[in-house]
Image (cartoon, rainbow, N blue to C red; front, side, top):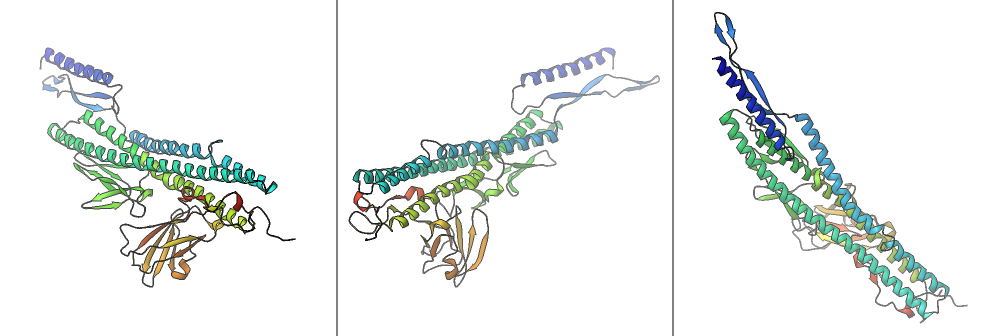
Length: 442
């Protein structure tokens, strides 16, 4: 190789270096781009009688400035950050609803009991009695308005879960397509397709913002992507899909299912952690459900306690007081996928002061029948129940099973979920039927 050839080789290497630097500058604002640099090597020297004579240099490859460890740390931070950001955004809605000093529950409760106090001070005053009914009506409306806001938040969560599932499926398909291109280009050129690798890493980053994903690299350069408890989402060029479907136990609740052949299997909420999807599922389970149940419990306890006290009084007609509020009833849902019998378990309120903010799942486990009850807030399961022990197994309720049951039937009991929505004034209440007098004859 001549002196000129050595110079030309050096210029070519330098030109590739300048082109790579320009490529780096041009992509400084490109999402997921990693800086690239050339890997330069000497040409094979020429053996002569005077020894080995150097033949210049060449560019061996263009490689990414990339740290697998640091990128893994970034992905971990991104998926956790997306989870917390989503959780905070959703929980702020609940805080704004309940803590509002003018539109929250506390002002309406204070106005109602102030009106009750006015009636107790002047029980014969018809205007005071009418004002008490108006305040009670406003309190009922406030309960219903707050519950409607909870329902809107719940519908929003359902919509966001559906959107997240669709985006996850789209990203999985894109990753599989990039996998195919990377395998083809790597095998045909024996050089790393850096820009494709960056594109795939960026897609993995976007996926982790939706749900925590685990990546395993194959020998051919393709990525396998797993979510949940190890369910494969991408295997080489093959994808597996998620589905947003109504829960069999509660049709108003959108859950995440994993499509396995012709079947769709529901994934446990606690298996889908990280990312905005994990934040939504975590918020609904640990905040939205207990908060709406707690609001309903306030409505139930207030209605029953006030009714019990009202029944001890005497109205303007000399009769003992009846119900002031129409006490809401617990909700029982039959599973749409498990239940084969047509019977529906019923639940009635027995003692509002014993109610919790939990929901419960009741499953028929054997002939007799026998049951098991799971507290869905604590996941504590009680087994070996029969019809007698089942009746009082949920605090504050009396349960009555249907005449016809099949092993495997599942019922979901929501003691207070919709109590704030369903509370109303009794149809018999008017100014004359308010029992403000003590039924004692002197």
